Each structure stands twice: as structure tokens, then as C-alpha cells.
Length: 367
Image (cartoon, rainbow, N blue to C red; front, top):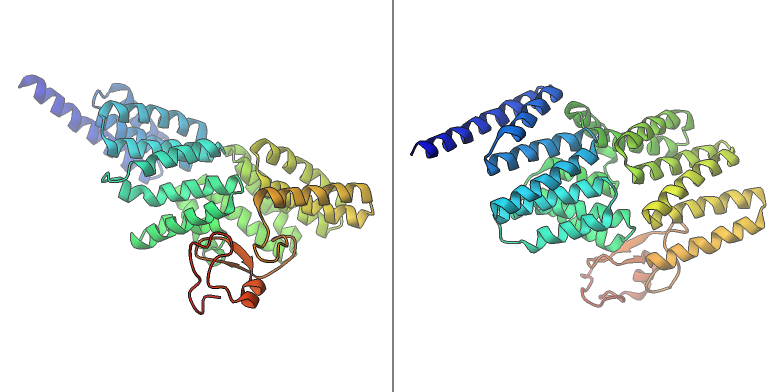
């Protein structure tokens, strides 16, 4: 009985210290909160308590952009989950492993861990975390330029967000889809309030892209610089590619073509390192425009060939007319199965089924 009472007291003390850390963290006393949680981790012998405090540490390091530390704690957490032999703990642990690897641009590992989570369906916690799993998997597919699967994952995540009234998840999905123009200022406020460095970087990048679309280069440049500073700090190489491509477009507007090529060269090195085909496609497209302006035909032909190689690899062409999608500004339509076509092709053919997979029909009036 005495041993049982001591174990129970240990559990209560662990819980109190975790709550103390949460109170400090919510009061923006981050370093003090981390110190409290680390002491719990060092002293507690309660596996469930250790699992919970590791979750707090993972979340805190994610919001600070310390992704390598986030991964370190996620690895310890999955070991703790295996010790507990509880599928709920395992599901949450694998999700944190997936999110950590996603932030470090280890996209194949992310997808593998997300699939493990989804294969553990039926657990109590999996129903609450499926939205996060779908979002993380979608981001990984997007990083690998697998657009159809990315879109499917984002749509699933958005459905979970709506069904559970999860505004933060909805915001993050919208960020990933790039469709949160009207919500960007509010997102930046949330990011600043919570000290969320990755979300701050994403908001700054979106601000810069908006100024670029208005050809307000002088305002766009400092936004890109700020975004790049945070992206570099937190190790977001995919974000760095997006920033560099935006900067290159700014230089092109100012007709500083050599400076634009310098930015593109840096982006190419990062994109090749990540295997990011979409980034490579975009930079080949920009290089084509630059070398056409400069009248350098050999370089122009080289990038035209490489652009079409990327289109083939990613299957970015209309399933009806066979022309590439993305080379020109065209109106597109995504069918319920997530295949893309030129809108004019669908209207002309009046199809009621997808020409690619034939799995799902288009409802009357959908096109």
C-alpha cells in the first residue's frame, strides 16, 4: 500500500509541474516553462507523465522553429509510447515524428509516419488527430510536388477542421493551399501572440508575394528579407526556395536580370537538394523568360527542354487536349477525384466522368 501511495503521489506531482509549465508558457515565459518541463522529464518515473511533458516540449520547440530539438523529443516520445503499449499514445507519437520530419523537409519519412498513424484507425485519439495527420501528409506531398495527393490530403484536413470547428487547423490548411489572402493579417496577429516563428515566416512570405503581384517591389524586398531570415533560422529550405523565386521576380521587374539569375541559382541548389520538382519547374520558367530577353538562344533552349521534362515528370498536362498546365495562364477545373483539366476542354466535351480514372462522375452543372 505504501508503494502504491508513493507512486500515486509521484503522478500528482508530475501533473502539477506540467500544469505549472503550461501556465508559464501561456504567460509568454517560455524559457521558464522549458526549464520546468525538463526537470519533470529528468525526475519523473511515470511513463504517462513523461509522454505528456514530451508533448509540451515538442509543441514549444515547433512554435520556436527549433525543429532538430523537436525531432529529438519526438524520438524519445515514441519510445515512451512503445513502453506504455497503448495505441492512443502510439498514434500521437507517430504524428509528432511525422510533423518533426515535415519541418525538416524529410518528406518521405513524413509520409511513412503519417501512413502509420492512419493504419491505427479505431483508437480514441486518432479521430481527434486525423486532421493534423492529413495536413502534415499534404505538406509532404506538396514538398515533393505530388499535387493530386497533396490536394486530396488538404481537402480531408479541411473537412476535419470544419467538422470539429478547429480554427487553427483551418488556418494552417488555408496557408498550405495559399488561399488565405483575406485572413493573412489575422494570421500574423495570431503568430505574433503565440510566438509562432514558422507561421510568422509564412505570413511575411505571403505579404511579400502580395506586394510583388502589385509590382510594389520596394515594399516586397524587405518582406522577403525578413521571411528569409526566419526561414534560414528555422531551417525551412522549402520556404527559402519560395523566397528566392520571389526575389528573382522582383529583380526581373527592375530589369536586373543578372541579379535575378543569382537568386535563381541559389534556389536551384536548394530545390535539387530537396527533390522539389515544382521549384525546379518555376525556376526553369523564369530562366526561359530571362534568356529570351537577353537573346541567349542556347541557354533558352536548355531551360525550355528542362521545363517540359518537369511537366512530364509531374504529369502537369490536360488529360483531354494533352497540352501542359501551368505554362500559360489558363482556367482550370479540378474534378472530385482531384485530376486537373482545362476548363474549356471539359465544357467542350461535356464529360460526366473523369477521362483519367473514370472513377467519379461530374455532377450535372458541376462544370
